[in-house]
View (spheres, helix red, strand yellow):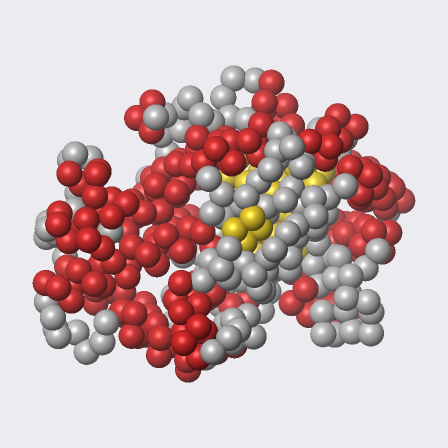
Length: 432
C-alpha cells in the first residue's frame, strides 16, 4: 500500500519543500485546468476537493457521483499531461448535511452511503462533518454526538476503501459556516478557543477508539477551526495572527495534526503565508477562484462587444442573468435588499453564488460562443488594459498571450500563485 502524502503533513514544516497545501474546492473545468498548470512546476501535490452538496451518490448539484468526479478530474489531467500520482482527491463536509431535513438515522444512513462512494472511488482525504442537527434536533449538535457520528462514517469509509489502495486521511471539526459560505455581511468573527480545539480533538479520539478505530484515528491529520477568516456577500475578514496565537499554540498538544482553514478566499498573499506559518497548513479555496474566472469572462464579454457588437444574440452577462432568474434556488435566500442590490450581488458578490450556474447548458453554450467569437486572435492590449487590467502588465511584457482562453486561465493562475507562495515560497523562481 502506498503512503498517503498527507499523512505526514504535520512534519512538512520541518523538512525542505512545501510547508502547506492549497485545497482547490471546485468542479469548474477551467479552474481545474488552471490549477494544474500552476501546480505542475512545483513540488506540491494537487489537492482537489468536492463537497457533499456538490458531488454525492444522488449526483449533487453537479450531477456527478464521486466516481464520476474522479473520471472528470482525471480526464482533464490526461489532456494536461498532469501526472495522476500527484493528484489527491478529497471530500469536504461529508455527513448528513444534504439530508438534514430527514430524521437523524435516515440522514446518517444516506451519509454512510455517500462516504462509502467517496472512499470506494479512491478519495484519500475525507472531512467528517456531522455537526448539524437533523429533523427534530438542535441546529448544532454537541461535540460528543458529533464525534460518535463522525466515527460511524469513518468506519463506513474504512470498510469501503479499495484493497491495496492509499489509506485515507481524515479531517475532523467544523467551526465554519455550512457548505456554501456565509449568508450575509460579516462584522466580526470569534477565533476558535484553544480549549475548544483541544476538546474537539480529544472527544473524536475517544469516539474513534471506542468504535475500534484507533488505526483510523492515527490518520486524522487535520482539525477544522476558525482562525478568524471569512467572507460574506460584501466584505472579507482578514487574518490577524495575533488573535490566533493561542489557537496555534495548541497544535503542540495534538501530534501529527495541522489546522485546516476554510474560507481563505480573498485573503492577501501575506495573510495566506501567515496562516501556513501559524499551523493552518491546509488552505481551502473555492469561490475565490470562480470569482476571478467570472471577472475574466465578463472582461472578455465586454471586449467581444467592443470588437464584434451585436454579433451574438445575447452577451454572456445577459445569459447568466436569465439563467439565474429562471432558477433562483441557489441565490435567492442568500442575497438581500432592493431589486437593484440583489441584481448586483447575483453577479459580483464575494459569495459568488453564480458559480452554481456555470454548468447550465445555456451558460456553457454562451461561454463557448464567447471563446469561438474571440478565437485565438491577439486582443488589443488597450482593451486588455481596459477590461482585464490585472493581466495588462503581463501582456505588455510578453509573458502572457493576449488570447481569450489564455487570459481566462491566467486570472485563475494568478490567484493560485498566492497559495503556492504561501505553501512553498521558494519553489518557483519565476513567480517571485
